[in-house]
Length: 358
Image (cartoon, rainbow, N blue to C red; front, side, top):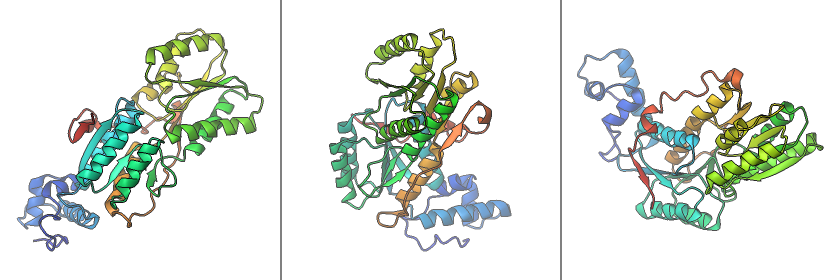
């Protein structure tokens, strides 16, 4: 057999042929021929299979290890992309992934699922954190079992978990900078927010306000709360508000941008309104192309998922510090190749390894 450092592993920890094939990008038959020296395989394929087997061996991925990712349901395309990105990278690494959806902005639903991961013996948990005492308690209990925890996109500071996502205060300041330029230093500027349990949203809002307050002290900032539980009321409110106020710009801190664009489309404005939001998706790509949105502050979900799995696979106490990912500013002029969903397509509508908490 070819020497790929897997012969000495026991059966439970030996990388599966399917896992090696997925990571190497070859068929399982090719992997079998390489590992058993059956011939008929190119040197290039042998090299890819060998490298994949060695990577899986080094990562310590065993066939019975299960890793969990917990994300909110009905949270828009960017969260769907993140879930698909986790499944994509799990398949590449040969990781058994349990992808669970919990009720959006419901701390009890998230805490219940964290306790469930603890009971079921997860090897690592990644989740989008809500700032609430019961979530902190559940996460602390999970961590006490020496289970590596990664918070994604929104953090729980002070608990010693790995965080993978943007520096959200810096992202908010970047949005404030863009808004100031796009509006020519004039106002009023509306800041629309709604995910008040997400520290990420809070930090973005604070960052945008701090920048505008310092650089454009005469610009009026209008605070608009968006209630995700009553979408029709929000649509009416936004439409009424945009008709009554002559806004120079609107900054959408979270997932409110679709309704904001619809509200603006329903009015006849004498001057253009600058719109800045977060996360490039198929929707926001279309908004940029149609000039309904001016700029998007983006975080790459494939990078977040990959870094999160790397962090969890390293194991408790061995993980290198997780960290922030680059803030990307995307406009109509630099859209090309920024949203490539080719690798995620098979996972976006798949129910594979997914469960919905009740």
